Image 1 (tube, rainbow, N blue to C red):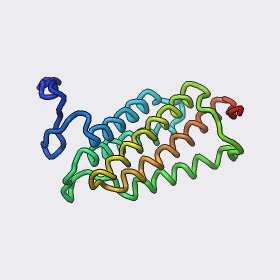
Image 2: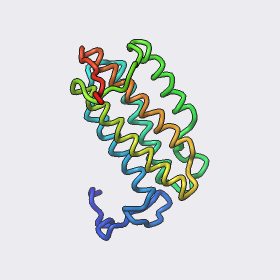
Image 3: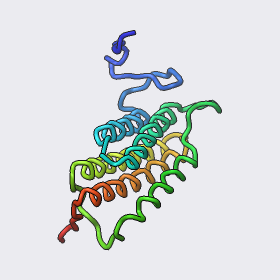
Length: 177
């Protein structure tokens, strides 16, 4: 099997239902942006911190479920779907990692060391994926848990960025107004 088919050369692609749609379709925009966030997470691992890397590996697998969910406008009961447990898992991770951080007293500038800055970048792309998923949900019926998951994931990536920066000895900077 070759990696190329030529079927997308005219600007269309297949949904999971095999329906052909434009590559600019809101559904493709949504799961394509999730793919971009996932690829960014792949550039972060390994961070040098096993607990963070285990979370990121799990999140990357969750993001494949998000993509499959978004790519399927007519899911069957046994199709991959984002479930409340996925979002709850993110909340548990956020709560656990947040315990080692100083409380936030102001906004912080995204950045820091290589790992922390990359996690902040992935957070920003995840926010864009969330916006794309919201736009799709306003136009078509989708799994509402996808938006909740992406919202919580951006919070988790923010927390992980802070954790990695703290462990690396990077000082958080507040914006000046």
